Length: 256
Image (cartoon, rainbow, N blue to C red; front, top):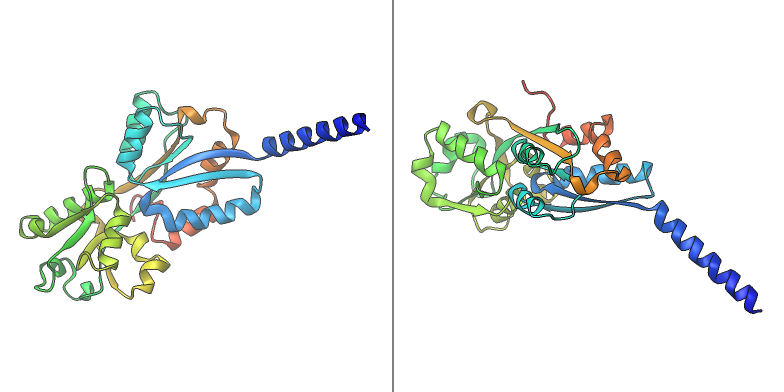
């Protein structure tokens, strides 16, 4: 009887060890603007790779850059720009080529007014007291929003009305839930199901008003040899992933 119990215990140990080994985990940090699209991409990815565990955290690219620079154990980084991955590569925190996976767009979104009527001048409407944008210190989309405001010579007129979200998705939440009257947000957020439920309207800001929102991803030093991280890094370039990104307003063509 004791022999049978020991054999059973050994079987359990081997079974659990095999199950843990079969489930390969990657810790992935992702720019907040990508949340809706990335959630969809992950669902499709899991259908083809059921044993892969992708642990995702969304937030501001600048915050993630600081954490990675200070040794945070992340395997893969999807930034809202190319600059943060390039800096990580320069300082030895990256182990893969930096991949341009998407080009983002900006939009003006509001429930109070229709920004398609006055377009950029919607920000000057008398009903607008607060304008939400991403914090340019941590959010690349916030940097591009300021570029666009300055391009149209609006910045000096509206700077006292600006309220900053830590990341671009928080800026979208501010305007969706009434903490701001209008927002300069990611087009991907404006097209998300959550924002559609709020029944606001959006205007796509002309891309020539700011430098390109080129978004890059990179496998980090902690992810070296992590096959799950490598598979997901490769998958973001797949036809299905590109279709999902395109659906939410991203492109891959620098000339678009």
